[in-house]
Image (cartoon, rainbow, N blue to C red; front, side, top):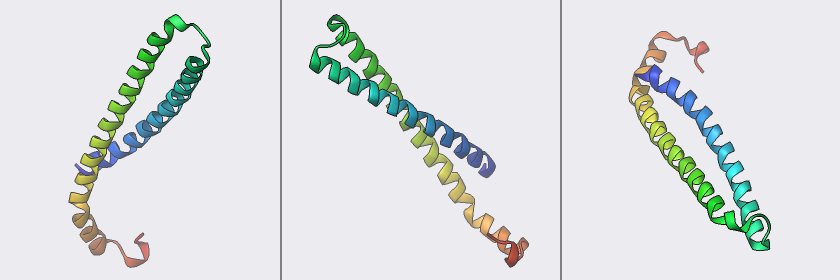
Length: 100
């Protein structure tokens, strides 16, 4: 269970970075859309469609971020559960000079 939790944490870090990149890109698109609407630029008849698309995208990013947070907390809890056993193992079987 500890090894599985550790593996999940590595994957979560990759997904977190993807979420951050998607969030940054979405923010840039929203800023541009906001500017276009304020200035009356672009195809006005499609503003509602563009807003709907961006809202769905942001909702998907937010939901994925929430799921990542839940998985992180689960993995963190599993690792914390085994921490005393790991420390005991290290103190018994790893020489002080080799300890981190």
